[in-house]
Image (cartoon, rainbow, N blue to C red; front, side, top):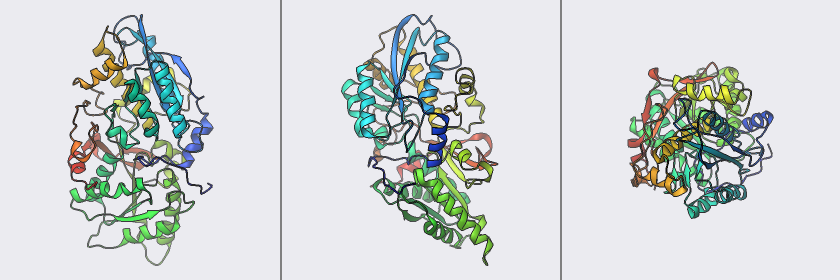
Length: 450
């Protein structure tokens, strides 16, 4: 780690993944920039009619790959695998899909270049993609009338721009849901977050969830975004979590430091071990909790699994845990079309989001049927009351002109559900029986985001 601050968009909502995962992704081999492939997209349930002889339809999936920062090679890789399977089964509504992939290099220049290429090559939608630089890619897409369908949920624009059709609730839903869950299980809560514009947005979201459960606000601890260690912050968070505050419940520490969350967790594990060995016993009972995007299964694997720092941590996610049977169709496609491809991990939230985004695209193409598939037709179909079932992975998705959260400035947020998970024996599993999801809409409406 160099300690060098990497420029970020001030509109970023979701911190990027830890550096150890970057290395894991790089060791798996980065996908070459801007590959293209004529292939089909859809679900494993079978072909959607026709022989695939209709005019091919072009879409694009982009993500950063091979960078020294955030990498999401699984997103374009699953798009191509998902595509190959469906074309082999007759395409979607008689259409074969030409899937372009592009590397945004995790910078604004790359994001703009990917968007311009999507326009130049006639893409009718950008599907299941990740980029932190909405300021750079959204304008070219708007000019060409191209929908941004099922982005990762990493920027504020994805929940405000009328050309965006998100399939998850991004960080707002994750933090609000985490706060609501911790209100029932934790004593004092400490939030450790970046001292940045994006970091300033985090406390109101977490506190809204805590307040909804009758809990006091979290202690807000600022930290440098590019620190190489967090020993001081870890000790302060530990002290607050161990304070009585009128409750016998063990405290919880919530690191939301993006790609430095694993650095904090190393410091926190040392502080917890030192405290448990000292004269005041019981510090080991302090639990950690965080959100998808700061940690997912790939992070847990890369940091030691069951012996790593995340064991026992609560995590809020957008979707059911990977072991849930509702993911079986995706796993079947991965097995058949991406066997041995280490970029595609069924537990990667980017892979899961891309799968859901292509499920929505399939529904759009089926609605259009034998008509001309253009960017305008795709947007019109999405705007015209289309309701998409994702097999229970999300609630039924639709994007009305004014969504339920328009009053707090998140007019495009169509799915506010989150799941509570816990790291047990090195795996993310459901923290509650029945794999139930929680709708955070009411909590988000109460958040003080001014």
